[in-house]
Length: 294
Length: 275
Image (spheres, chains in turn orange, purple):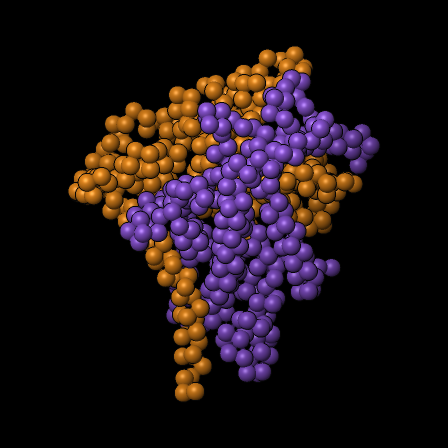
């Protein structure tokens, strides 16, 4: 071997990362650039032509009467999902962390929907939430006349959010549980000796100690909320009156049902921009509310 | 804790558990009901005489076996491929000093690029290559594209924690770089690999938008898309058959969880991290 070990490492390193790096170029960087390029094109799939359209697709976004409804639905879904998901995940983790007998059983129960195939879970709920479905049958049993959940203007979005929270809250719960178990008992005992009640301990000890996990789960959950698609496609098809027409669903309709690739690309670019801004924003804010970096 | 507080905790957990267990319970029981009893009132929580034919119908009247196979082999290939290539890249980023290390920061952008954003250009690429209605895009893109970035990140974070002395010993035994990765680093990395395996399998198994966009023939469909197609010739819902099909899709995920979890725990025990 004439190669020095340093040179050999240089070569090995590049060879090791080559498959990933090339894949990244081909399937992430290039398509990302292409989306920006398409978004300023007027793509006609039938004629197979593509003409420069400048900012037309973005201007269309402002003239599109559906766009504000989509923005509204996306915002409501994201905020509702994130708040509900994180609050429930943390509450469940706190309960399970009490080390009562039988908590492993409950942990398995709360985690179990994660194992159910997403579309299967959504189909079951589609079945349960229909007008003559299981939920209303149960409500009827206690004398309540339930609404048509997925077709009602006020209830459709709520239903979609709850279905999605129940599906995935187990993942965040596990992350929170790990964080809670990482809090040194000495700190908890010290605060107890100082006379801190449960609420005070939660606010002044537990919340700051688990803040890195909260940041992580918040970022993951926000990004996931913006990508919700299968649930909308199966449960509501964006209805009623676009009240659940979130960005990715609208994007899919424009790009693949209406075959408007230019406008679809503009919507995709907007989606990327929103995720990028929100992630960076949360990351910047971490100094304010993250107590220490794990 | 006082007795009353304990009881209160159990009551709260018990009530909270209902919406988590009930849908799965309903999915299984309704899959065993005859069609006219699925929507019966009061709801049937225990099928009096289980209709196993629903499961047979799910397979005989629809190409479910083929679709099952499609989903399985795609998920297995993507999982194995991701485990291999992301551990390789993760190893290099963590343990090899070379100029390409800087690429890592760039690759992390992939964490913020959801597959929806890039699917239009990828669809056109796949179309130009004549690969629509094949499984190529469903296998190759996830292994090398954005979905594998998280796996690479997890593997890198794990490999960083390996003590340098372990590799020194391997080096003295004359192992090459690939040998060090293959014989020293990879065997210790079982817990990280198990984590990567679990979430990659789960993600791939749940893919919905991609098969919807790339596939057109029913026999090429993967399970999530196939599950939405259970309607009779008049477009009416075949709830019991659909729920039977849905129930069967849980099995592979359970199996992966059981296998990977054992690896996960064993890995922890081996590395001496567990008590």
